[in-house]
Picture 1: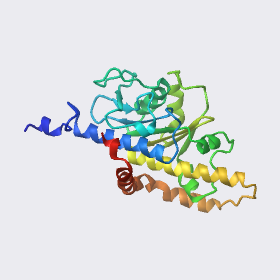
Picture 2: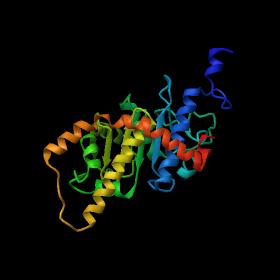
Picture 3: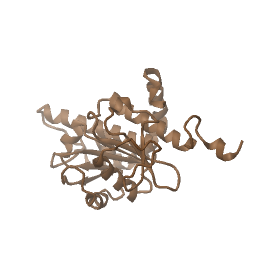
Picture 4: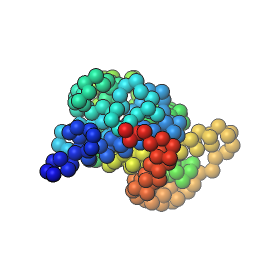
Length: 256
């Protein structure tokens, strides 16, 4: 057996094992977003870079619920939004392409990108003060957040330059009045950033609606927690296998 043949994923034509693994992980991430209720019908997008020199990435086919996404249904596109998938009938959401192509083009470390419209995240994005240090969870992510002003539905490719300038080297982008975006070297890292961000936003919304006086931690505690947050992305390597086991027990069809 040649090395080329050995590297191909079984049953998926000329697709390499590396690409198939990314597809499985990204499909799992779509299912997890649906499982936790972070999805928004067929809207918002998760993407992942396809290993290799071609600068292709995977994104969801427009019109499918996140709970329906499978590894083989994901669409492979280039940075110009052209579908390079063997199935040319697949369609993508242009707004998803604008946001995700901007990040993948600018950040070589952006192996995966998660964009959500989850209500608590949108609520915090609309609050002038942004994410407040009300919880340990918030303090772990606050220092990794950048902000981008709302410009309308993301259909204008010219917005990409402004978006990536605002993002800089951060791993979280709060899209004002719109939603959240997280970046990871791989799908697991991007999911962990989203998990902590979502939890922090949920806690803030609940704390503010309680109508009670808020207790703020000391600046020293905020600074210490920021230092301790540097290893947060690596938590994904421990949480991700457990999440996949949960999906496998519930519905392993994401792997198809």
